[in-house]
Length: 151
Image (cartoon, rainbow, N blue to C red; front, side, top):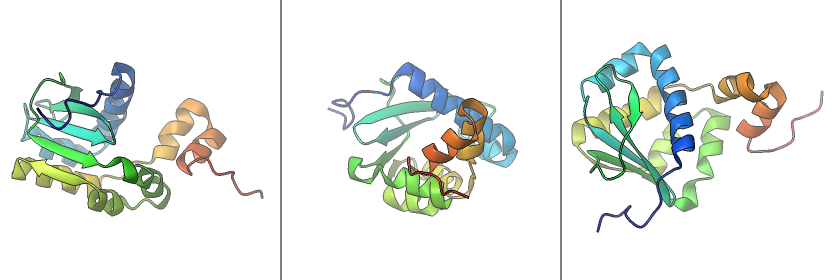
């Protein structure tokens, strides 16, 4: 039985929102999409705690939500006890922390590309969220819900 068979996949809506955000980032960073396009047709599974999403790499380097029954070429796992680190990474803009917290297994070439992208892609989460929810809510979400300093 596969390790993730007992855990539910992300909802279709959550997976779609995540893939849309990732593809926007890849659209702004052509070098990243180009590196991924060399692995087109392969599938990456991201397991966050007890849920996961599978993504297939398209010819143009963009990601598509994949059927969860597809055996992934690479699996990135962030254990449930380390999920809180996601907010620290966003707040401090230090993706190396996230890469160090994840367990990566599978196709070595694709695993290296995914790890490099995780280290080097710079997502301005607050800016993207601000377009949807406004500046103040976005700042609070990225800071992990902490109140903003006055002034």
